[in-house]
View 1: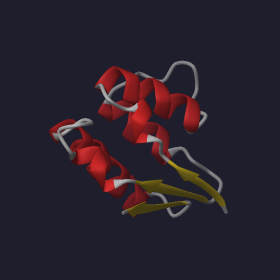
View 2: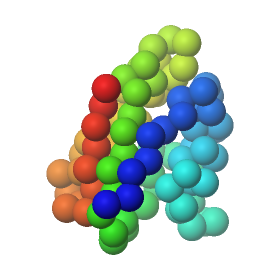
View 3: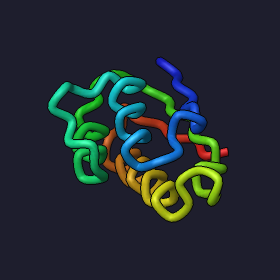
Length: 89
């Protein structure tokens, strides 16, 4: 199983977060850089993948409420895609 720990230092704005996620998770170039596109691309993952997300992503230093929404998208996608495992620590 591939493992990725997200570097939240690269996720201080929603725009930067989506660019980073696109690159870190090898999303296609047409990735829409929004929460709906994130959910769609996470649903398309077809190899076992563990994504570790620091819970600090929800802090005001990083993305605050938007970070919380990103985490919710990851957790929802985990329920829908058996190839995806999410750890929030």
